[in-house]
Each structure stands twice: as structure tokens, then as C-alpha cells.
Length: 409
Image 1: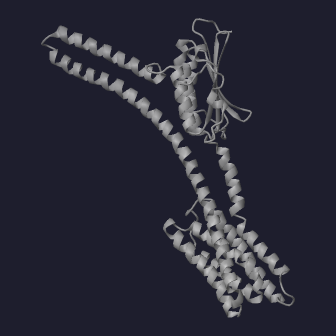
Image 2: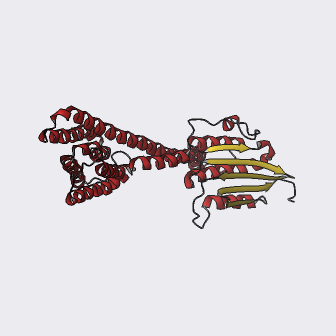
Image 3: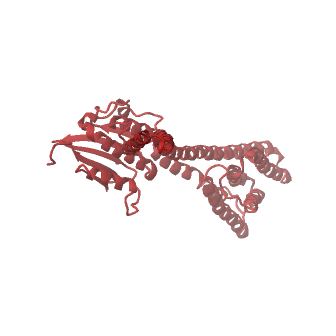
């Protein structure tokens, strides 16, 4: 049980390092995007710059430069497109095997072509196929990732070292083999690891949404169980007494009338109990509703604070404000992307005010839900009112009602 007389609980004063904050997902998404998506264009730029700066005099003719530039442009553009698919999670990219194989083959061909013109080009022209290897591995189904990663790394190493052998550069063969293998392996697994982290974050975000839906479903099941317990008991008793009264008609009319009277009384009791469940009178108090709301919202990753004391609300009004808290918490879970929720209880000159605020405002659909309309009807019967509106980027649900027996000022 939380202490509702405390303005802000101790747990709220000390942030929990493991507490969920959806803003972290936004920041991590931005970071992941800038780490993954521009990688191939940057590799292409690095290869272009290195080829120009490190080229030996007369190494390239105009046609050579145009071919190399065309290859790098294609690799940069296609790599950018493929990288965007990684933001959907591991194995969630759209599969275009023919296009992906063609682009990777072009990167190998570019590596071979550039190194054949100048062996120093191996330093940066290994990067585009290495980056593509990481993208293709991350896009592949899980069972294919390990063999695909090994195969692509060996393919890049084989292309670089095989060309060196053909060019008679055996003296640097070991250096090229180690360099190309290391760069390709590190780049591939770095991109795969970053994509895996982002995939885990996406799973956590989906789990948060499911948690909110389950909280709403749990509350519905609780209500259904209460209603079933009441209606099942009363209806079974009414059915049995109805059968008994039917048998007694014409045999013992006095007993039949007594049974009919009991049936009527049972029906009235069932109606009252049903209304009590619907209105929150039967088993819940405002304190219970506050506890339930805080627990459910916190479990869904929504930081919740309570300001004020339940004792400020007169007992006859507790079920009414309990329904307000329950409806407000349900709406936050179902219709917002809130990160924080504030619940305030106050009383001034006999006028009780309960406010639920959350920062998960979504565009208005132009009409209030049936739950809010029902609350307004119930508050109106006691001379109160319910207000629901956006205020300074927060959505506020406000309930106002005067203490029974005291005139409103």
C-alpha cells in the first residue's frame, strides 16, 4: 500500500536506474540510426578520398576514375537503402536476394578493380564490402546468420589476397590477408551487434505496449469475475425458487406466494449488487483504486506520483472518485504514450478536486469516450462535474464534487 498522505513518495524522489523511460528509446533510435544508416555512404566517401590522395602519379586515367566513382555511388546509395531496413530489427528487413547479391558482387568487383590499379587502395576499398556483409547478415534469418557471416568474410579476404597473388605481391600477402580479414570481421560483427541491441530495444517497447493492454484486460477480468459471482449466485437462487413456486401453485398457495416474494427480493438484491459493482461500491475504496492505478501504471513503465490524502475525500464520495481514478488510468494505458502521470487530491471549503494528468497527449478524435460521458452523468447526479482537456502539453482529467450535505460555493 502506498502512503497517499505523502506529497511525493520516497520511491518517486529517488529515480530507479532500471525504470523504463520511452525517451531513452527515442535517443537510442537516433543514435542507432546515425551509427548504422550512414555507414556505407561514409565508407564510399573514405574510399574516394583515399584513392585520390594516395594514388601514384599516372595510376588512373579519366575512365578509371569514372568507373571507380560510379561503383562507389552505387554502393553508397544501395548501402543506405539496405541500412534503413535494419532499423526494423534483426531479420525484419525486406528480402531482395538478387539485388543484395548483385550489390555485394559489385563491391567485390570494385575492390578487385581498385586494387589492380593501385595496391594501396586495399586499405579503404575493403570497407564497402565489409559494411555490406554486416547489413546482409543482420537482414538474414537467424539460422543463416553465422554461416553467411563466415562465408562473406572469407569471400572478401579471398578476393583481396587472390588479387595480390595475381599481381605478384606475395611479399605483402600475409599483411593483406590479416588486414582484410580483421576489417571485414570487425565491421560485420560491429554492425550486427548494434542491430541486435536495437532489436532488443524494440522488443522491450513492444513488451511495454503489451503490458498496458494486459493491465486493461486484467481489470476487465476482475470486473467480470465480480459480476459473475454476484449474478451467478442470485440467478441460480431465483431459478430454484421459481421452480419451487411453480410446483406449489395450486398445492400450497401461501407457500407459493412466499416463494414469489423471496424471488422479488432476490431480484432487487441482485440489481443493487450489480449497481454496486458497476459504481465501484462493493469491494473497492478510493485508496484501493489509487493503489491499483499506481501499480498498473508503474508496471506499464509510466512514472506515477500521488499528491494529497485520501482523507480529504468524504466517504460517500470515495466510490465516485474511485471510478474517476479507474477510468483515467485505463484511458492512459489505452489511449496515450505517457511517460509520467500525476494524481492530485485536494479539498477546499468542502469542494473535493481530483486531477489526473499525463504527458502522453495524442491528437484529439473530436469526441469524448463513453467512459468519460458516464463519469459526467454520475458526477452530475451529485452536483459535480468532470472536465477533460489538454493543458500545456498534458492531458488533464478533473473531477469536482462537493461534500454531501454542504452547499456548493
